[in-house]
Image (tube, rainbow, N blue to C red):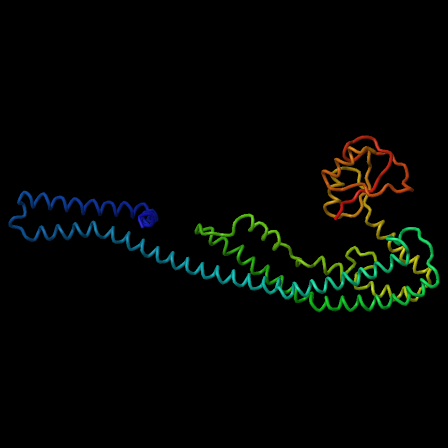
Length: 356
């Protein structure tokens, strides 16, 4: 209360504060004069003067005090009303934000996505295993022998079945992740957060009221500043190229059906070309340490870089980036250069990659 009175007093202008001081001084002076006069008997036969002086003393002292106290009470009432409004608005805004997050990240939706993901992974693994068995290798880009006629006949019969199974799994996933619905829900979450972050947070900070602790606030800021919804990368892999060697994953079933009408030589050449093109586009040449780190962080894949041939340098690169030498190509041309880390002379490039 005392702090509030002091704050109210300081809110008055300088002139008004001096007026209040003068009024209280006059009131005290009149009160003292009345006490002294009564003691000395000045007002013995003047009944009117003591009453008048008492009234004036009360007026000059009481009015400033009453005005300050009333202003303080009014200010506190207004502040409480504003805080009540702010707390009510905060609760409503948080509830709206949490409700939208709960809908977007509902347990049923997450569970359904996991089931759909597991189904896609299962079908995809079956197809990958069948193709590896057919070619007898993990990489169709390798130089492999032509399968027998019986192997080819069984393979082309299986291709449409794989395509149908994959289509079925992808359709189930598509029903769960309507792009428009998810984008609208994500936009609603970001809109609710913007209300909290740009208005509620400012108002609460102005009044020195609690807000989210900084580490949590920073994580929310980083996540909710992204215009793309969290599963945009998942959608990109299924609906667009997304770095997939056969186009979008949703297009792969069509590719399998087309392969069913190819000769065994055409199947091998087609898959070889696609796998080799995919591998080649995921090899990035770099000539400096900064480029090396940037490619690993942002792009991934294989990084073609100079290496000085020492185990010590390879270990140092692994310690700093978790990247290791994955391949020294057999047909690697000799190329003089400088090791990206040690700066020592190098005779050729090697392929680095991180394990995931």
